[in-house]
Length: 329
Ligand SMILES: NC(=O)c1ccc[n+]([C@@H]2O[C@H](COP(=O)([O-])OP(=O)(O)OC[C@H]3O[C@@H](n4cnc5c(N)ncnc54)[C@H](O)[C@@H]3O)[C@@H](O)[C@H]2O)c1
Ligand SMILES: O=c1ccn([C@@H]2O[C@H](COP(=O)(O)OP(=O)(O)O[C@H]3O[C@H](CO)[C@@H](O)[C@H](O)[C@H]3O)[C@@H](O)[C@H]2O)c(=O)[nH]1
Image 1 (cartoon, rainbow, N blue to C red):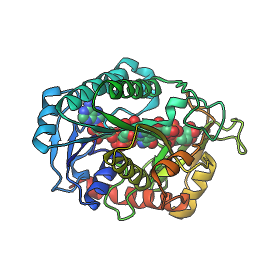
Image 2 (cartoon, protein in one colour; image 1 turned 90 degrees about the vertical axis):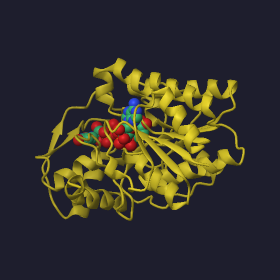
Image 3 (spheres, protein in one colour; image 1 turned 180 degrees about the vertical axis):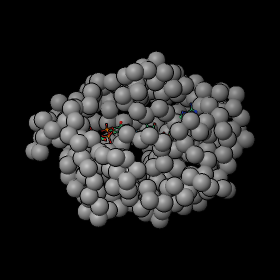
Image 4 (cartoon, rainbow, N blue to C red; image 1 turned 90 degrees about the horizontal axis):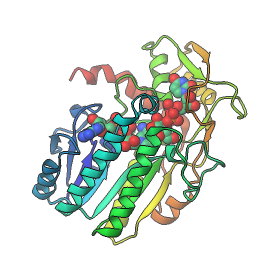
């Protein structure tokens, strides 16, 4: 039973494709390559370049490949861009997801695993954040994702559909075997930006805000390694295939690192010092975002293998160093 992966040429989706291949699964990728790269996929992976909102295309892919499960990664993901272009984000993340779900369910998809985000919690009233805390997103990106969670829940009540919503915290690192990593152009993510600065590709690294109510004044985040996250998807897939019910699960480790702790780790791992500029807070950044991470272990039996910031940074650094060569392929 083939798995359709939307956004499979992107950072996290490409790791999911590797996890599926490693498990001997059949896969087909749908991606418009707006931020992803075809070269991020092994050449044997069936690939269709197109838009998730193209219903005829989605139905053709599902039928031709006999897909029963959908892992839906395709989205726009930059929070400040969502503030500048909210309607564009609601189109890409909400309206197009609606079209995708309709086409997929109509063509016979029975399981959906959806890439949601800790951004649905906004500025959490308490950390670690449990899944039951009422969501309260503070930017259009988080709202665009929350609306898709709601659509899925309603569609599952009306149709032959079950789902797992995975709310990712801060995804980082790369495939430990070096087969994929984060290749996004102009990425805004802290660990990627810091490794690029260590390699001299950026002049300096700005630290956004040093006056947060945290031990060192910088924001705390729960960094989850990308292959551990792909494993969580594999376990969600098995759960749905054996008839398991709908779930909404945090994907994090349940601990936080500050921006300064991350930068220290990048310095140590890279062996390079690099300039840091203390800058004002970035609009929309919550002070502390840390997962309560028990439910995913209880429901799926998920056991992370890479809960180690030094290893995560080492993978990101190794990937970044190799990236210019890969981009020329
Ligand atoms: N990176 C993180 O820290 C993080 C955290 C929480 C949630 N997420 C979610 O994870 C998912 C994947 O994020 P990522 O970091 O891999 O981003 P990414 O930009 O690397 O991947 C997104 C992929 O989707 C494709 N795409 C976008 N719009 C499309 C469309 N309309 N039709 C077909 N393909 C389309 C892009 O070309 C790209 O390959 C997203 O849904 C994102 O919201 C990411
Ligand atoms: O150059 C930089 C980049 C980031 N930061 C700080 O580092 C922390 C992490 O920032 P970033 O890596 O951009 O991630 P977040 O803004 O926390 O958002 C990520 O994590 C969310 C889930 O928690 C996802 O929804 C988003 O898609 C994903 O980008 C924040 O405090 C930022 O202010 C800096 O100080 N300097």
